[in-house]
Image (cartoon, rainbow, N blue to C red; front, side, top):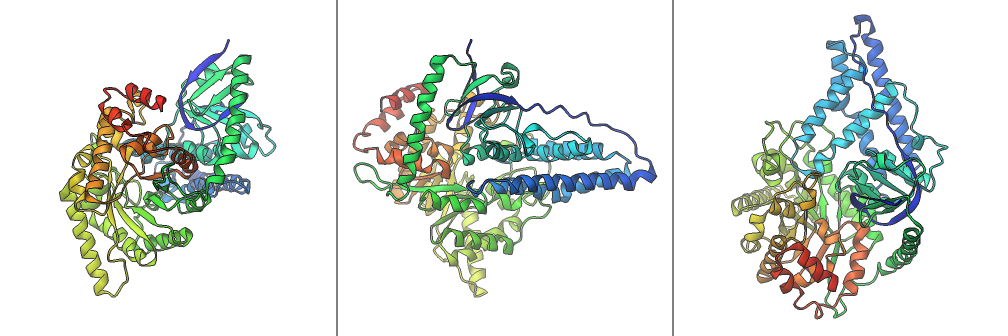
Length: 576
């Protein structure tokens, strides 16, 4: 009998194959006292395990297929950087020497301390980075405990044509999948902002996360169908289901083969209205794919990576050199740099200066609030962005503004830095556009006020939806409430777009909603003319734009805004 299991689809596509379950035995971490004369040996044992872990990750990175997207290797590099990070290794070494803990237990204590700090972070993206800590520590622990390599990490592994099921996967695991010809993967935990999900989209591997009990309800070598679009896995499918999904696979292959031909096609509707299509990127290495899909620029460049996995924040010169390198890669395309969007718990890395854990960090000291509280952290980035603006087309974007007082403080700080640079004879773009992300309901409601003071706006739907509906979008217990089509969300989007139109400034959307083709026509109807999406989805969005006629969409926006439920809006979109 066919069993249908439901999770969260994070990477589109359909796969049909047999199951291999990655069973990571729960490591039994021993705790014992080390004698004084054994401290040096125990210290060497930990350092050797870290060294071997590096060798393993370098071997995995070196086996990434040549045709793989250039934004894949940095995920492995992130784990390699963690292995070099004193935050991870020095404290266990100290515990071995001072408390006479064995290496496994000393490492476990530091792992638990770091996980606690990450758990308290309010930013969903940063909070999921705790998975990286866990993956790196587990790799070292397995070496210390002399565990055999897992099947999917063995060079001669025969996993081609399989669907992997695991409780969770590391970036190294995910990269190995493509190397071994794995068709898809399903995890019991995880969310849409995890590294695993991001990698799956970049590797174009169908994937479902948060599918609880998948490893118990499916058995080794079971035939399954993974529908990454719907977040559905069918276990032991009947012949009718197999035929249906095989036909969909054929249709998908033709569809994606045709998309690449749209790279050079101007993005405009059937009635010749031009639409600006830009890309969201995170790491410097991501910029190559921006050109591969023909994006008109970068509408969101996240800079948080500069602050991660380090004890001190980056200095102005490091910011400056990074932005110059990005501009060189962009080859003249415009770049929108978002200033750091880090959170309340500042003890872990370079974006954090110390402070207490807050009771409700999701509503606490983050993004521009942190920047204004810690100008010594903020000013070096602003100076570097302004200096870089002399060498290319740069826009400066501030996240999480919620009132005009914050806006004026930021603009005053920018003016002060401009005056400093001018007095020092340093070149910069005096007219650099400064804009804001609209991701707090208060900012959307007052979008007309912001539009009167800024050069552009960009709607960050991920947080806007989360704050409007008052739910944590990475919490499995309430994630079902995360609804982009909620009437309140649509009204806030429309208010922001109308405010931009009245002030004659551009308004983009850089949240996940912009990259979901289910919403393209509705967003066009609401008045959106600038999209900034994950590069993997840009050509799909372009195809929808090319097939849309704004005149035909007349009335759709009004009908959607009058709807009383998200379900009513969904019915309206189905009619389109």
